[in-house]
Image 1 (spheres, rainbow, N blue to C red):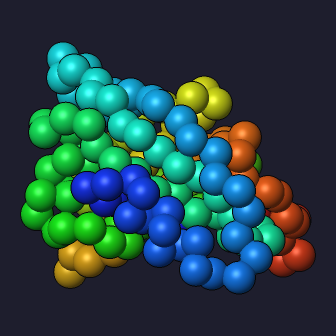
Image 2: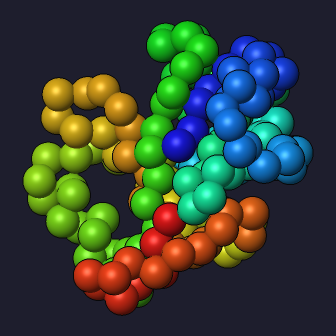
Image 3: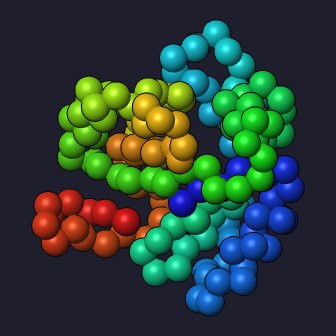
Length: 151
């Protein structure tokens, strides 16, 4: 689950109220939108944690023109996306979601080297992130139905 905030401390402070939250890992990263290679990557401050197999991500954009900065400006602080990892079926899952009417709003490559898409349903609302590879900071569990490693 991912949140976008103006101040990282406010986002982590909210989640710190949840019992059992693991210590936060802090990262400074910059992602490029692969759909617009000429666009500059803006830095983000990210905090990562988890409770059991559920990962939490708090994102603070450090500029004003990135996808995350624009989402924050239009929606304000709060929950932005839910993420799912499909290492064995990434392309098929993205194609299916696009065929069902989801629209891509951001596409890029994670620091772990895998592809990621942010997609929104036709009626808008919560963004769905589809990841190809596991972020190193998320715990893993096995989906007993598909046999894939899942959150």
